[in-house]
Length: 161
Image (cartoon, rainbow, N blue to C red):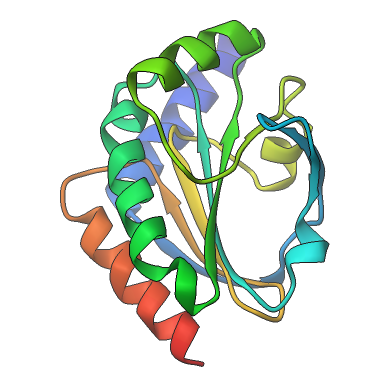
């Protein structure tokens, strides 16, 4: 009960404080992609990367995914990619959502939450932006209307560096 209450307080704090700046090297990970390939973050060095942690049960995640896909389509030719990291324990739940909300960016699976733990995911969705040098530059907890404008502004900034 105490642990659940603490987690709830962290989520509420994240919603109140909004996005935060970061300045650490993004933790490396290798995850299985929906395509069957293994994707390693460090192999994408030189690309601006938006990593979005999501789950099928998360309403704001479902709202955000098509918007992230549009952002991906708009900026991918400028050295930008989106990695959607699904946290569902059961991959079938994610596949059901993706059948209804198709995206073109790579979707990765983190069923044991090891990657989400290394990124201190404490709200759903959580979105981080990583620059071409592998530095974690922006960390957004939750999703509200208007966040996509912030994401686009930050992506533009990072692809122009």
